[in-house]
Length: 446
Image 1 (cartoon, rainbow, N blue to C red):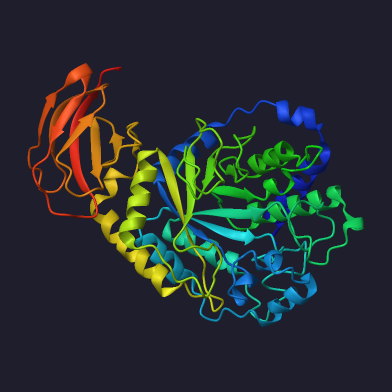
Image 2: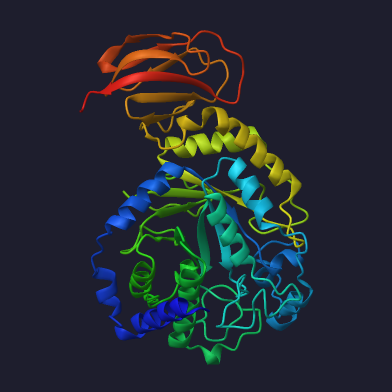
């Protein structure tokens, strides 16, 4: 740690201990985002596509990231896997290059998951990639340096809950791992987390966002659990004023949060039972898996095909949201071949049609059977995802001036219909991943 990093660390520790508002004060406090955050929110929304990376010693078991909890493993026996964790084939440059070529604009990496193992050289616990494994290299530092080099933004996932440390107050998960419930010490655990977060924000360059998870572990407490989030959020914004904060709590966003997260569903949908919250005015992001798992599971090779993934990206953009698409690397440090193949296929599509996704907003057409629509200035892109569509009835509110196929720029017939709607008539077209019609429009409400 250099002198500047030590200065940042001391300043952050002072921020942690200087003021401890009551729970009521925290929950009622107002939050006005800074100009740096407002600019970061715009850049985040324009990106539209990111890659989630779930990787830790759980990959050694090849049973997914919840294996410690699901199998009720003793934490000390589970921790022995660290002694064999040697991802010899990890290559940060290859990872970032493959992700960049996919068209993704940012990476969200699991710095510490619920099992408490840290994927960077933290001074707060020896249970980390450098001190506890024979690999002895700081994975996060290598990844951060390569992201900065290749111009990909780096976001960091951080778990609020912990199935290993005694200090963490018991929630509704991780009861079978051998923790001593009599040693719960929230102030100590909260201090531990904030010191770790300070390391992440002072030792790894510019971080685009902190992506929290685990609030839901205490959502059934008889007395509402005070996570002291706003104080933690202020610390983050003080350390890096441009760093966005998101929390996968499945609730309406709390004060201090800069993006809203939806898990396994598009905003407004709740087929997975994890995203029933109302849609806020914050930038939106939905996280989804390529196969069925977040962390590597050897038995799960049921990868969605590239057409399905591209359709999910398009529908997400049509909702005015980002897609954070997950990959679970193998224990040897390689991205699964199926995942790399999907990245390349998505990148090929985005290389041709990316402008209909990047920097767009929702047109408000989100439940159409034929597909969805995105808007950029005076251009609307109708993404026709179902084959054989012969006509589209565009809702009122848009004055269509021109219509043509995105590919080939062939004119498309349209006419005003009832109640200010516009009827778009389509000629037969070859079945494709996404048949795009571009409209020149003027909003009637402007």
